[in-house]
Every structure is written in C-alpha cells, then in structure tokens.
Amino acid sequence: QVQLVESGGGVVQPGRSLRLSCAASGLTFSNYDMHWVRQAPGKGLEWVAVISYDGSNKYYADSVKGRFTISRDNSKNTLSLQMNSLRAEDTAVYYCAKAMWQQPNSVFDYWGQGTLVPVSS
Amino acid sequence: DIVMTQSPDSLAVSLGERATINCKSSQSVFYSPNNKNHLAWYQQKPGQPPKLLIYWASTRESGVPDRFSGSGSGTDFTLTISSLQTEDVAVYYCQQYYGLPNTFGQGTKLEIK
Image (cartoon, rainbow over all chains, first blue to last red):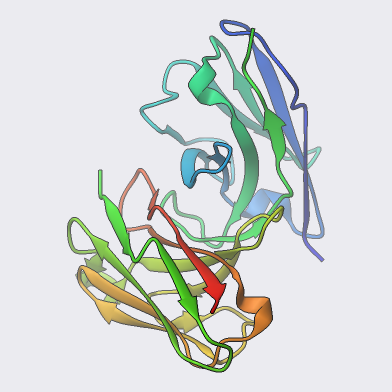
C-alpha cells in the first residue's frame, strides 16, 4: 500500500527558510515523478513543483520560482522541498503527491496527509 | 496558464438525487496525439487530502463507485453523481494536466439538501 508522509512543517517567520520532507513507502519510488501541491487555509489547490523520476527535470509554479527547490533521494525514498524567503502568502498545507505517469503533466493518484506551514511574525 | 472555472461554487442536493458539477477550461485540454482530454476530478473531504476520482475526463479510478461519472471534451466538462450518498459530501475539484502549470478549478462544495 502506497504511503506518503510529509514532515517539517511549522511556524516560520517571513523571510526565513524551511525544508519539508516526504517519506514514501509501498512503491518503487524511483519509477515515479513526484509533486508538491499546496492549499492555503480554506482555499483551493495550487500546484507548486514537480521533479522527474530520476531527478533530472524540475518545474515550478511562477509563485515559487527562484525561492523553492524540489529534490529527491531515490536511495532513501524521500522527496524534499526547500523553501527560502518565505512570505505570508506561502502559508498553506503542503501535500506531496505521486504522479500517475512519468510526465510533468499528470494526475495525482496518491497524496500524503499534508504538513502545515504558517508563515507569521 | 490554463484557467479552470467550476460552477456552481456550492450545491445542495437531496439524498438519492443527481448532482452535477461543471468545469470549463480557458483553452482546450484535448490532446490530438493521444486523442484524450487531459482533465481530472478530485474529491476532498474535510481534514483529508484530495482523492482522485476520474482522469482522461471519463476514466474512473480503481475503487471509485460507479455512481461517479465524468463527461465532456475540449473546454467543457461535467462530473455527475447519479444518486447522492451521505459520504459524497465534499469539495470537488477539476484539474487540467494538458500543460504546466497543472491548474485546478476553485472547487465546488457539495452538501445535502
């Protein structure tokens, strides 16, 4: 059974950094593209970033480009999101999500439970 | 970016009745090389992550009850729940995966009348 477990969330001040992680199990992690999707409190879903199955390709939403970095360690079945220069508008629950296919444009067939990142002074 | 617009924003339907949610994309999400519409539907219950219901506009994900169906092509799509059950109370999102960034509709909140 596929399991995705996010960690690393918590209150952070504007301008500071935070690193999120997602531990994957129950799948051959290195076969799948992986995404981060976020949801501001009481709001809709916003795609954040994708990394290809082998880590060679990465794409970002304009809202986070230059500030966030997605990475993965296939030897540890772990996905990460390094978030720098955080802003109040980055406040959200961050979900890691598995792509159904090896393409940056994909549906997300498994999601973690999410980790909350409040950005506040 | 492709903008996804859902209607209505909220919907109240009686148990056992049909619920219909619409999704319109700002440009066609039909991809000719594979002859498919790159459109998915998700269900999100309070405090839970989204759950994939339908992809390719009309292909039901494994384990999804057959009362859920998707239709449409090009820019106009519909999610239909044929006979509403109490466990269907949720927010529903459409998503296009035709191009990056992947984008979602604003969501439709479905309640029991």
